[in-house]
Length: 225
Ligand code: SF4
View 1: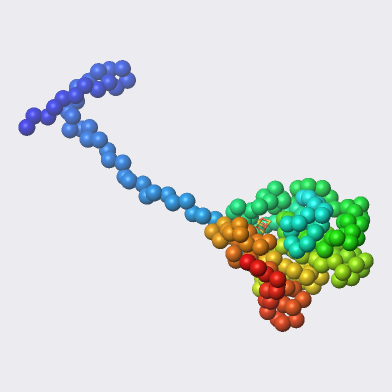
View 2: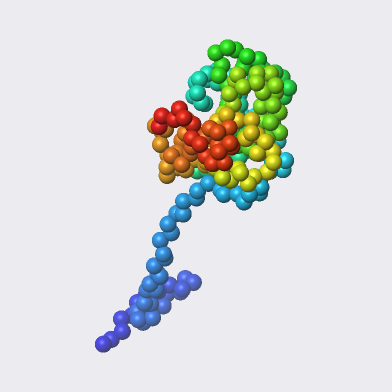
């Protein structure tokens, strides 16, 4: 069988060569890259400390709202969170430098707002309140001094209850001032917009004093769904 000649051009010169020399190289099929879904980060006990991380910055303060817990509430959004949950509801507040410094003036304003008879209490969220314990402890201590338990204190956290139990002393101290803790990362796969005060079904609304007394998680007795 005769080998077919083909015309090629090399550096502008035309040449005839045997076609059998030019067997097209087959590309090796590349394995299809599947995008690995990243979940939230999981710290070791006491790996993240407010003393190392917090810049004592505030992302927002929302007085007199109805969405961050039971009743009318004043909500303080602290800046900085390392959990990096995909789908985080407040991504800008993951940055510890975001927003404005916490000031005495803001604290006095919060205390005044809480004094309104129709306000049920304070809510801490963020960002991560437990990585901003300098700010949160200062505020909750003053609330207990001025209002005792006539105002309740709720906090959201990315930590799970069991993780907090082996965390740093400042985190445990903050927990001791709370009435209600909504715990756990936001898990996009478990997202459920119908849940009461939570974004994903792994999160729990925990009665803090009862849980500390019982040594195990006690769910808020007003939980509806
Ligand atoms: S714990 Fe909350 S604030 Fe932090 S990344 Fe997750 S959803 Fe966002």
